[in-house]
Image (cartoon, rainbow, N blue to C red):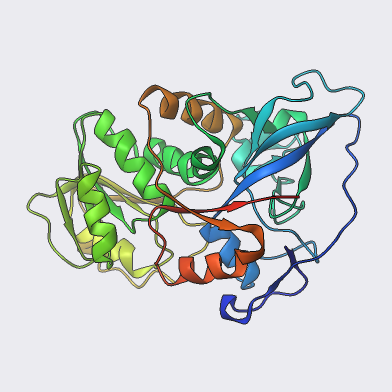
Length: 330
């Protein structure tokens, strides 16, 4: 499913097309894609809210498939192994951020579905060092949402500094949040979910949320931490309003509408607002290990590849329960 030029999701911007099968370089593997998750970042990509250095581009960065061929110097994987590919597609290893262990901020980073063709296709190639073994605990479709929703959600938990037993607020309840809730409950946290969808609130309660409401509602207790997943800047103000002194709000979106002017009392008492930018390979490895140990149960809705436009439209309308996943068939 090829994006030639960005358009609104309602305009069906993705075109079913035949393209050349990619050939792996010496340090790359070619993956026969089985499934690919549908992410809000894909929506921001097709609608032009993110810069697109490569057009046309094949979106998709929650890829699960099987190694179909390998380059001459590949040592980490063998043909036939099941692997996953995530948003982080390549880093330079040489800039100041890579040197500090912050490859998520690499000056020269490339991202799957933005700089390199992604998984809305039969095949994808990737450097062997940016692919991951998928735990046996998950089938293909249930593993896919872990590769972005799970990874970025896990990094958001780390960035906002959640401690065992704390009170955590989640604003927006899509793919990331429904995974984060399960990890936080495993850490004995109380989770409070803010979302406009009653269906999403019901799912949150089913997964163990102690309270659900809409943005702007006041929970029964102040929060220690909050994560904003919805791409809505106003939610930062909403989260600060119900945060304890010294608490942290992390905005986990790759894109957001503007954050409104804040009255200083919302920030006073050492409350912190921070962003979550991309992820590292360590985040991915740790998330997959933790998710398998819990085990996390991803909620999915499955669509054939040709219905990628429809999946994006439903995602935009907050009508996906959990995560949308495309199945790729030859």
